Length: 100
Image (cartoon, rainbow, N blue to C red; front, side):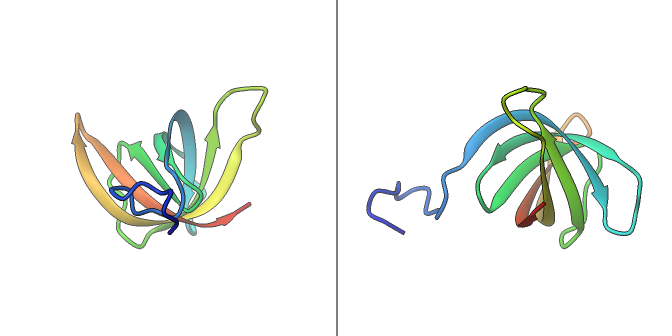
């Protein structure tokens, strides 16, 4: 970590707030689920879903900003934390294991 990084963040990569639709498929399952990206960094993602995902779950996730400026981003993600966020929604934190 460099001296220029904020002490209270203690992160190697900055986190950006992103309000974009995501779709994801669970490992060994072809069903497509939807959610909403909350924030993103080089190595992690926070997104909201209607279903609680188990910690350790692997999934393939696509972020689509619906903008002509940016192509949809695909990544393999492992869930590390899940929190209820009200209104039958769950906030899922994941580590980005690989970009596709």
